[in-house]
Image (cartoon, rainbow, N blue to C red; front, top):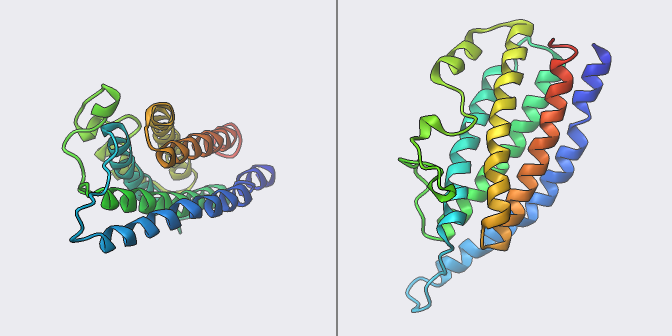
Length: 209
């Protein structure tokens, strides 16, 4: 038990380093937002990126929203220190990443409302409910009502599937997005969520077997 907890808590320091590194992107987005405001009334339009870049940020922002909901259902519950540590880190990091993506969409003059269809930018258009990695409403309800180690195990399994779906999208965007910031964002997400999948696998093989 103690070994598993230490492994999960080892997520914290890399998480904070990635969080700070991501801050540079957030500051850039904020600065561009200010520039956009200053350009109102000017004849110089704000350049709009291709659909891949817009679609990735819009869809991933929605994908992150459910990750936050998953974390909120387990934080503060009696499901083990390992799940508490991991959920807290994911909640912090993905809240921040989602803010970055929403900022860029606003700068580009794009809608930040939940999309009616998703993943068209990958050639895989589908309804939002069928998005890769998303938990169903029934699974979300089960997570909310589960208790103890059983809740922790369910959270880990749902978050693992969620991360696999996120990595699938991020890997595509890191190769095909046109804007350097979008590619860098996608690369960070893919690398970090892959790392967290490894942590989850360790926990599912030990404490939450």
